[in-house]
Amino acid sequence: MDKLLLVDDEKDVQYSFRRIFSSPDVELTTADSGEEALKLIPKVKPDLVLMDVRMGGITGLETLRRLRQLDSKLPVIMMTAYGTTQTAIEAMKYGAYDYLLKPFDVPKLKEVVFAALKAAHDMQQVVSYQPLLESEDYEVGVVGRSETMQRVFKLIGQLAASDATALITGESGTGKELVARAIYHHSLRSTKPFLAINCAAIPENLLESELFGHEKGAFTGATAQRIGKFEQCNGGTIFLDEIGDMSLPTQTKILRVLQNGSFERVGGNSPVKVDVRVIAATNKPLEKAVAAREFREDLFYRLNVVRIQIPALRERRDDIRLLVNYFLQKFARSQKQLPKSISSEVITEFESYHWPGNVRELENVIQRSIVIAKGDAILKGDIPSEICTGRVVPTNAAPVAPVPLSESESPVSSIPSSGSSPIPLAPSDLVSMAGLLFQWARKDSKLKIIPTVERELIIHALAETKGNQVQAAKLLGITRATLRKRVDKFGIKQLLSIT
Ligand SMILES: Nc1ncnc2c1ncn2[C@@H]1O[C@H](COP(=O)(O)OP(=O)(O)OP(=O)(O)O)[C@@H](O)[C@H]1O
Ligand SMILES: [Mg+2]
View 1 (tube, rainbow, N blue to C red):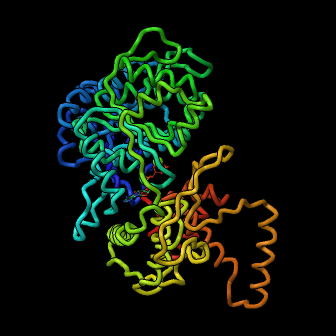
View 2 (cartoon, rainbow, N blue to C red; view 1 turned 120 degrees about the vertical axis):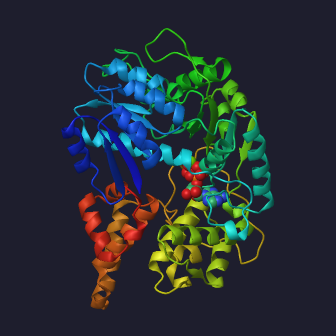
View 3 (spheres, rainbow, N blue to C red; view 1 turned 60 degrees about the vertical axis):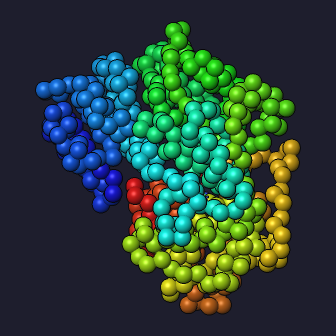
């Protein structure tokens, strides 16, 4: 349940917010003034505050200033009418998370709200990196007892005690972001903000302005000044995910921030000073990118001061059992059910599989299998068949070496979903697959081919998108409403995330 606090003296705005955020997963509280908000915050403990700049009584800006003395991390989104953006910019300097212009563009409003909630979640959910004891397995933690993970834990501890820049590398789904959050939570900056930016997800021409902000008129569409993530995160920690995808000009700016703690906004001349700790991550072999002159060598050395290389799951098979237990408990807790058990036959299959999507793939497989399993235990028939057919080593054999990416191969930036095929598919393959399915339907009409396939596709999409309905619907080319109806029909509501 996400708790939002809306601070606005206009009843119309309160009414629209109630409509926009009417969901069982969101609890909206309203305050008519800054004074009331300051009283409510310790009681309500909101995850996010949305606050009007202009109100009767103390202003939004003054409320924010006082609020920051109570809590330096709680994300606050300031809302302002066109023409008063300057105040919103001021608010950003006081540590607002973002600002929105009135009248609201509802999709944009939702996007900003959900991004802020994710940031709040990342900041609040402490990630422990000490190897967990059996009884604590349900805590949010970086799970692993293998020797290679012990080395990772040691480095996290050392990094947490210092303010050094760190580079986290490893294949997709190995837990790079989780490790970054563990460093943050144990660092001296843990009471300050933590912001994660996925450099690969933001179009190249927007990334620089996203990170460093821009001045009014810096480019077409820059109708007002904007504060970037580095300024927003002053005093805190910034996590630059997929840094290998950053363009050379942006890399140059990052290097300057690391060297001098200053930068210029896009289209600006005066340097802005910040104190931000940078943790970067990539699944690309950066050494190769340096050799190909796609990544600045000086930036690479600057980031590489402390390097945490997270091993692929297939290189630490002794952690699989522990991770399986951890995920069974985690999902059971989120569904308020008793954890399912798992047959040893399934564990054996898991220990023999090569896990191209690493821990994320294992997590998705467990989540999906919990839904599929009819009884209290997950059996071999409940897991995707690829896990069994895709085995690369016989049971108990030595782990296989990771397959290095060839020069021409582009690294995976998105993870194949649970047990997805490594074979590239063409649209024509779909036609032949449908033909095959139809043959089955003809043989056995009890099979109910359409709902069966539909259910499987929805489970895959929800597993891939961690239960995000909008993204899952988009993946499948259906509307969110249709997805929602099918989810209800198939009784798989537990796969939905809180959106
Ligand atoms: N050691 C671990 N213990 C528990 N959960 C883990 C561990 N490693 C990864 N996970 C889980 O696996 C999922 C993927 O982890 P994360 O997002 O940190 O991977 P990543 O390396 O950043 O992947 P990508 O390169 O695709 O961004 C997350 O849900 C995370 O919580
Ligand atoms: Mg990541």
